[in-house]
Amino acid sequence: MSFFDVLFCVVALVTVGSAAIVVLSRSLIYSAFALLFTFFGVAILYVFLGADFLAATQVLIYVGGILILLLFGVMLTHRLYNLNLKTETFQLIPGMLIGLAVFTSLALAATQTRWKLVADKPAGPTTEAIGTLFMTEYLLPFELASILLLVALIGAAMLVRRRTDA
Image (cartoon, rainbow, N blue to C red; front, side, top):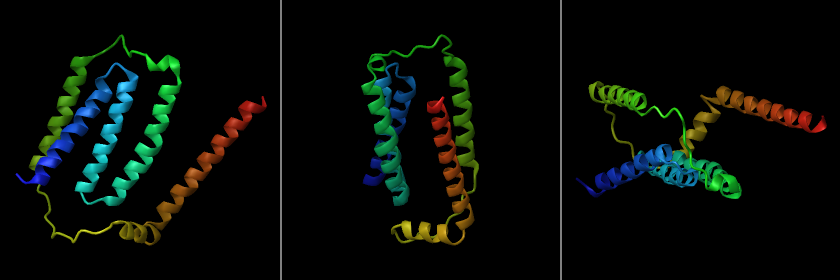
């Protein structure tokens, strides 16, 4: 095994382990900090795939925005800091069976599929190709998504305004 293979295995184990902590931890603050390692692990896996734009987006949007907002919300809310999460209907066995079924189906699909082999491309930034595709082939879906987000923003502003006026 090469150095990059070992590094990939370590990053994959840390990512999956921290994701398991997010799901299984009873402390909300531990789950939030484990989510930090999960997001960084996913960003590093994007780097291994050669998707530099997705890795940067993962770090900026998820780690820099969503996770920090979540951490501030948890830390600034005093009642949530010492909250122990418990559920009355913790169904471990059905959840494990469903998880095993999903893992088995994904493993079978990965091992039984005939994957198409393509020639290696030279490593380089992917942002130019993404920008070119956004402005040529995918211009209409890109503009429709921007209009949809604008309508959602206007709708949210109207909902907030109605509640404060009443």
